[in-house]
Length: 190
Image (cartoon, rainbow, N blue to C red; front, side, top):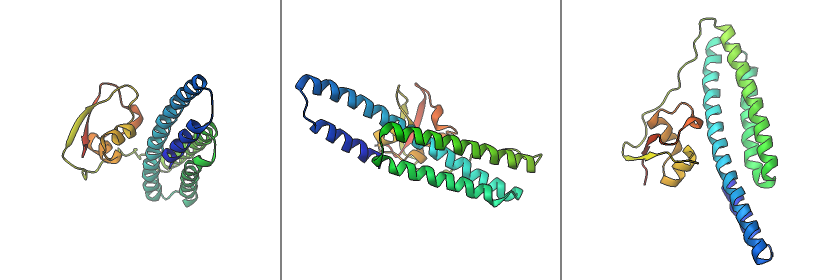
């Protein structure tokens, strides 16, 4: 949905009447800003997926520990509110949207930390479970070496692959911690 917003913004900006030189400079600046926004939104999408995975793991731990259902409901509400804000990005300015998402992500992180602490205190000998990966992804694909500016979502989009398949195939626990020069297997890549 945010890609549609970016494309609409570019179309509107290129249609505005400006002097030729001023228009070229303004358009170049806007394209650079939009490219940065696209990359940041991709990073945010990965972070949201990661927080959703953590939330799911916490729900399992909370059910096992007998923690209150209110904590899980609060986390679900925070995730729903975050998704609602992301969907509403087309109606708000870029900076305002990023600021709201950052605030909500901080709130969700605080709630997640509180839930983790609650589970840890209710189960003194409980250990945090390792992330699980499924083996349900295409076994055919290509290898790809990460370049500067790449994110997992941009790699998936560029190569026509599924982000979840890349994470599972490479057993990536933190999608924000990929490094330039790192080689990944891209299942189902074109």
